[in-house]
Length: 112
Image (cartoon, rainbow, N blue to C red; front, top):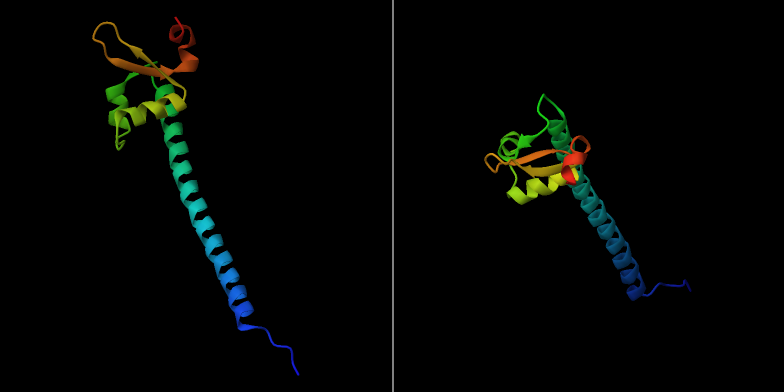
């Protein structure tokens, strides 16, 4: 007489294998999504840093930065990325405009 495997055991093994495969696929897709999001965010920070570091101007107005980098849902989202990119904010005394520059270029002014 051949030993037989109970149908419940076979069903449990199949369920475990399917569950493992689904979990692995879900994890892979989630990791790909996070990689895309971080890559976009990192690229944006690089672009902001290059914008603040280039040209003859040490500072740029927030409105000018928004014009160069459209597509943000809110101004505060762009401000957070400016800070993460090494930016610091100043207020121009003559007209109250919001100016942004790199901390490394304005370290003395930033902490007055």
